[in-house]
Image 1: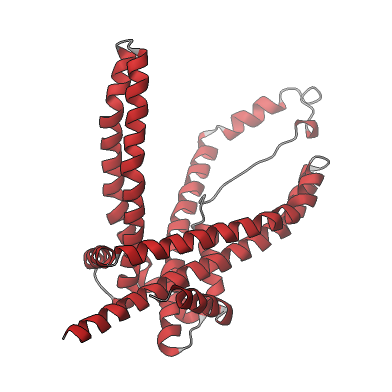
Image 2: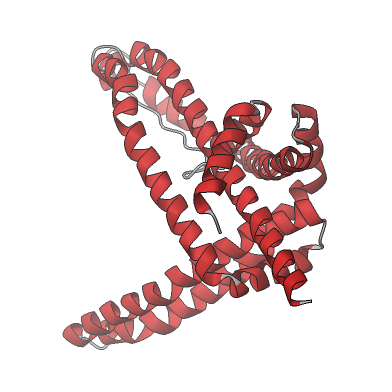
Length: 304
């Protein structure tokens, strides 16, 4: 496997086919590392409780009213559903668009939406089929491995409880982290089997596992390369982030509203850069998948 060729090709696709940027940005917004976050900054100096007696309790009562709570819960559910839909649509779109580029040397936003709409539900199904059993197993393991430590505390054997608790946590980490990494790789490969080769969900997961198993060293090395590239890009973005938000952070201590407004352009720039990184990452894995499949075909031809 020529890893440098794969990375170089992914960079070229990302830069040359700007129609992919839209879906990278959508992926960065709706399926970023932290999902969607709501951060509210409130400066108590902006509101004088002494000069407005009774208003603050009324405000809290209004927020806690059944109607407001129902609206808030409905809004949260809507955002969760929207995040799932748009996130998986963007993932499918990027995979399909890179496949278009590799096969036809062209793609478009319309093709991206076509790929995304056709396969977003399947990718969501792959995600559920992999991570629901994993989560259930993790919960069982947590109960089993932490039970001795908890029992030690219950029976007032504190030292023994601490030892068992530490050992249980270490064993959990040793088991869970490699397993989660393996499942993540299987999901990445399964998504491409589904979108590119139109396999069924169960078949995509099965073939993703088989491809990982038969090329474990190659896939692990590529994952490590992508991890290092991601770390490097993150470090490169750190000073950019500080530079973009320095004026907003400085101003927020003077005027919260103006500070937040001033931070909007920086946030948009970071979302854009994050979208490019998401586009490149997806393109790299798709090109790698296609190269891996091509190598497998060539090996079979040689054997025959």
